[in-house]
Image (tube, rainbow, N blue to C red; front, side, top):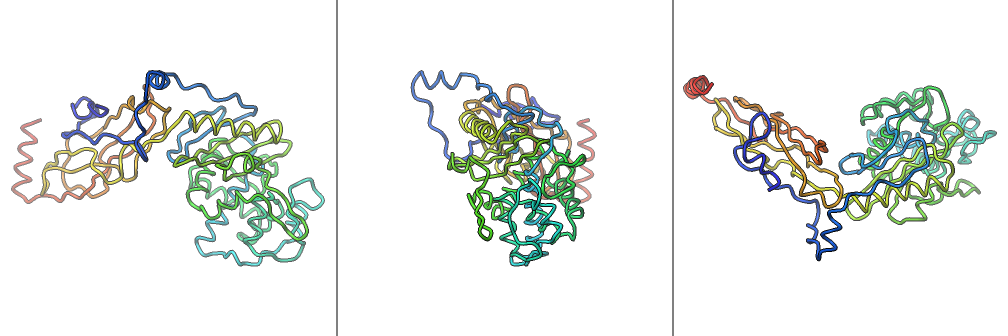
Length: 405
């Protein structure tokens, strides 16, 4: 049985007294393979990911945040216009906080107009200079048309200047887990201190999908019109695969051709990042190959449900003599298909638990290994509070604890 090690008391600092529930797959349980050919297929190793043209790339499972495959994922790269995903994130966060409104009238300042496109080779939305447009229209133009002018105008509207807005971008990035990123502008134009990594960009894309799905949905709009000019979304995958619903392209001479893509098939969503590719066509081809590989050969399972007992442990000096431990959020793991039965869970729990214990207090850790590698780890928390017992029970337990020691 998958959790036999936990039940036998051979793992962790201390062990569960009761067998933990058997992990279950997320969604409907797949039918058992039929025939020898299917069984043989399950035993085959997962093939390597496709060969990718680029300086850095990865494929991430959205539900777990696990990196399924990648190369140079923590090396510094220029994020180019993928930067605008963080511009969208900050705008969405400020909208959610009530600090701005989708109906705000945003000025296309001369600075935004000149710096963001007019007279340059940058992406340009085409809003008239020194005129105002609705914030929602400006935001969609930035996302779909990759308009630098719209990005700068939004930054000025939210923070007063693009420089101040960039500081907000970096601060929000750190909050969502971007550890090796610094933003100095809202557009992605090249700068010596404007950088990120493939991993951080995937973290950013995942946060955009998770935290602001309504704003994320702008990324699947295929075209947008400003005045007489209609421009198409540069993400070619929106036309090539119906499961793709975002997220952002990027390009300039220092960054090469870049694409962060996301797709959902059934209950599974993947995010890919390809940086430093050689052409628009190549970044799209490689991104789709990574998505197909990830969906074909990987699956996500819910190992433990939130607020359900994983272990029951003895408690000393409490009004009750035991406490149930579990995870505060569902524990999900991504793994190659057919490997579910090979998961090896373990728990680290202190040998002695003494009341009082607060509900939600971290007591230990549960982790899951596959092929000798830890693929998921979560805190074990008390599912209920345990109050301290009266004087005589505490005294008796003190004696018993001394005797056992």
